[in-house]
Image 1: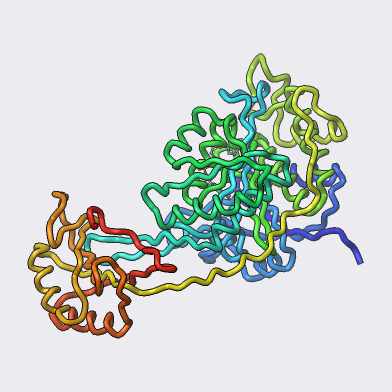
Image 2: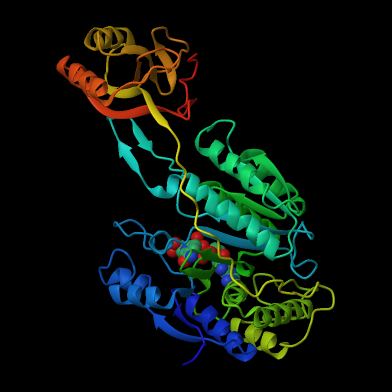
Length: 482
Ligand code: NAD
């Protein structure tokens, strides 16, 4: 019986094999307790006709070992190939994407020497649920899917991460001034969970000004938790302003699985030339060691990495004539780091790992509330004017439900047109039993209504039921609706 963890390793494409080779040498020299199985993913698998970039056998290995250290892969353009990263994140339930980004000033050039921010991005939901439809010749919809469970998991993870790593402030970023239900839920859950962590201060930024501040003054942020799409964008902004994409690692964490990788891609332009900076993957491997309870080994490696940078041994992406002492290739950089294992940096603050345990969250309690249907939005394909459609619908719905309003591209066009925008060929037609949405609407009434609209020769292409949640309106009003 051995308690040495067995992980899965993929060498990936482009510079992947070079930086993985360097990383495994560093892990070995630092005394990491690891065994590993190597799987093939990426370009070669795609080229063999497998559209997902991963074989069933490799899946089995991943699922058995639980922990995955992955080099970047090249995703072929077009041709129906699926992004392997998105597939792995969703299939293994890797709900949290953790990306620490710090400055290495004055050794690596940056405008922001105080930058030290961790972005924690929700990884499974939002527009990345990939639910999109074309409904008419002109109209496509994408579903922004947010669940209370998803919000709770990622936000609680962010606070637990802050506490475990001695961080004091968590910022939430959303766009809840516009998306009051989806982003509003994320912000509301953030406020609720913040009360469980009284020692951590918090604030909230609307994502647009938040991103601008992150680009202009990243030193003001500590931990940022945000939704999938915003997190994708701001974590690249953060990496870019910190110095080099070659330096950052990331962790994708789930309840039972975790994947660690550099944030950059396979860099085909420098592949095979011994030019790549292996620090991103080495930093990712250090996060993996903490996750595996080997925080001490992780700190040893991180301190040796800081010493290497302090000594001016730099790969080409961060090398500066006059500032750096030596330009190192991938292999030479790894060898220099290995030589410095056991040393602590003089100018950088040495790394102390404050936790030796991975963060495990209690399962989210399912929420129960009283959901009452109070209406329905029926989407109708119509090329003509709104008045003729409105009259036809009023006639069809007579005695069943009332037509409260119709909107086109979100703007109300019936009973009165409140704005002058150009119209498209899909109308959202809102029916209810009372204009203040206090009277319940039965499923029978909705079915009758749909049959009546169909019977009037109109083409329905989507419906959305309108609910109250514990008596509170749980849908947005049309722009201009009262
Ligand atoms: P990239 O990150 O590979 O390269 C962008 C630039 O940064 C290039 O100039 C490159 O030389 C440089 N660079 C990247 N990593 C470096 C390192 N470690 N050291 C020194 N310089 C480095 O981005 P790209 O060119 O847009 O993408 C190339 C391929 O990588 C694409 O096929 C893309 O789909 C894939 N990709 C994979 C992942 C992943 O597997 N996680 C992530 C992003 C991109």
